[in-house]
Image (cartoon, rainbow, N blue to C red; front, side):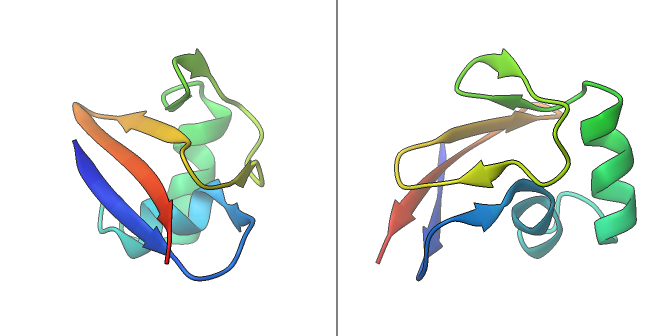
Length: 70
């Protein structure tokens, strides 16, 4: 599992996917989220602007990311 450092909370889900290089653009991230291809804390997440906070686990295309406040 990879750790994602966040400096302020909350952070929108699509931004994490984009900034961590799992997708090329924010628009692409929103499409994958809306299509139900992203899990947050083990549940399918379809809210494109879902707020991610410390400790949340994101799963997408075989990658697992855990957010950590720094």
